[in-house]
Image (cartoon, rainbow, N blue to C red; front, top):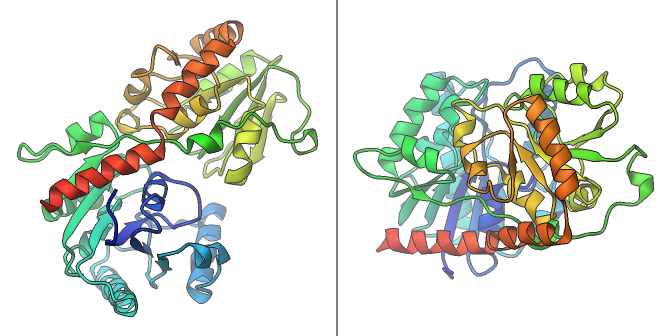
Length: 383
């Protein structure tokens, strides 16, 4: 593992929710110094409750830079929040944001005494900052196909990403299909699949009954973002067809779930703190990955797959390419009827030996292993 290096990272907000780049880069601490830049998202906000709440959180973060006390306790981690404005697709706004971000990052670098950092980004809109900090090398860690994300200006994102890939020294991606899509001029991105916080999710201790609503068994569970890439038609038909089963969904939602909430056997628990998540999952009998299969999701490597497997849970999923790699321990279905049949089969087949097989697979994919692989990639690109 690299040591005594300086890193600048443009990615999702540190500490808001666990995600791959934070998992990886936390393994570089405290032996390296990390300057994390919380910038602006790529989607322009709408007048929805979800977007209004996120906008309010962003404004509060600018006003109170010490909003998250835990950040002050992580050695060699500095998080900055430059003031930026949405609607980056307008040239004057983009120019203003570029000046604000570069000025803030350079000021932080000067304060920390950083010189010739390694720059890492997961965001196409960071193309405006690459090359501005005398970095020794730059890496695009591509975690999703943002050119297909719902709610984005796909043409604008594609233009930024093309420029970014031309600028950086290395592109790595989390899925085989992403590597294929992001290949340019014969240069194939390096594959860096998602990992898992194994020790965290391998806990067998369920949450106390007082925290978990009483409901009939079996409990069919899901945790993660409840977003447009879920197959809500499939879910409605599945949940409606099995009134004797309890379906528990955990996570933030940015879509209308009223169609599901009216079903008496559907239970939405909202967002649960990351530390409590394994306890809730320990009460699942089967876990779901009910994604649509489309141009966006064929490039997705679901974080929750390895998290479910670390819990020892049987998993029923739609036929996503990255999930299909584990078809020997995961059940693949393409309709509500197939989901119901395979959930029933998973319940009947579950055993201690299968739970151990799942956990063995997850243990070999830990974030420690992924971070070591990433470190070697960086060393190679540096020569």
